[in-house]
Length: 339
Image (cartoon, rainbow, N blue to C red; front, side):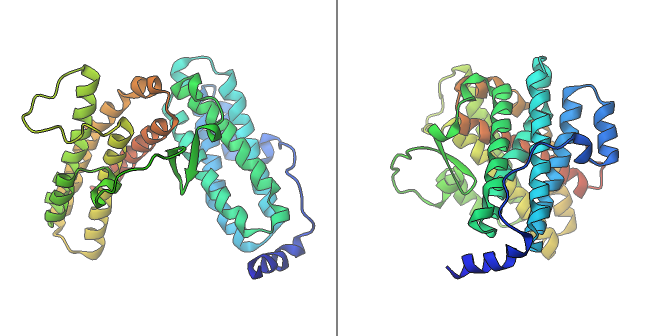
């Protein structure tokens, strides 16, 4: 109760509650430089990149505007987000070339929209209840654009409302209702096997731990390739990934890369590993991820054929994490990053 009263006091100077306003002209939203760049481009993916960058800038700015407690500037920023989404939707609906409709920029924008939706969900709780309508409308328009992009990437089966089939909690997507699962160990949180989890714990030196995590990532691709090829499991020992879904394996791959980046960052920041080991770890990460990315991209047809939004989300996250890991490794090695 006290928080609600405090919010009313903090925001009451900005006037009465407002509803979401109309779509603004693009020239009122983009900077002069961005507008000129947008107008000079003719290809869908180039224009989408300009709009994505503008949306990313506003997603970073929104928490700062919330801290300033000025509803007028907050509403203006939300209106700009809706305008950007409107233009992105228009050019997405107009684009007919399949290569363009499934370009890397479409994947990048989908990820931005997903993260921005989470930001809107959290930040609207910082304003009084009667001032939240523009947040809800903006989030709805973001979700409509995101569903359009998912249709482009993975087919029409993903075009319906996700609320009928999935529930979103803490940024994760799980099938609803969630079936009861047997009690598992800590390793299952990352979708690693028990043996893999033990290997990670035993690998105290940075280079060894990176090696183990890269082997985990590699194993997921090998198992996916085996299933897609229809090959039988030929080892005498049972297949440790037999009951792992495609989503489980992409999740484990993503977690392995995130763990590598986290370990390297920590060792570099705390100076608890020799510089030569850090550089060698970065080189190994860069070399392996450069090979992982084409293997990921080769799975796009599989992901579309599964018609599973949670799997599609995880696939896009795996792509984004791979790109982040590759760019980060290049940067750490002092090499120029790729656009």
